[in-house]
Image (tube, rainbow, N blue to C red; front, side):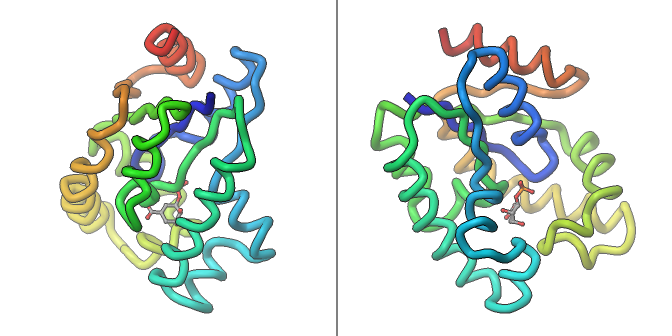
Length: 173
Ligand code: S3P
């Protein structure tokens, strides 16, 4: 069984995956890190060199490969992973994958992402907090269709990473 964490950029997928892995004595793996290792480039470099479409194709291939080669892992996806290339169908098609959408409010996402947007090619160019908020509002609206197909939904607002990990455990087991 794999536990697959998904949600918008900045919702805490990677840190929650690590906390949950400690708690459940499992290993965690982050899809973005896996892609960077396999391609030997950062996500930012992949976007800059080849563009988003190339990234989405690779992301799909590496998600498949990761799911085929890993069991008993906590897997954190990239924010866009569920929304492209039939990835959500892939996840739903195998009942060995337990998917959890980490739902975070627009306000919390804007606050977190404004200070760390440079690392994210899709939002790095947005200059003001107001513009970032508009962008995320629309993007989240489009993406929620996919995120809401997760088997479980856990809200993250005003909770610590450890509290969220506890809540995921009690939701799943
Ligand atoms: C993306 C999110 C990023 C990374 C890439 C694209 C997205 O992952 O996969 O920059 O489309 O939302 P994080 O959610 O881990 O930042």
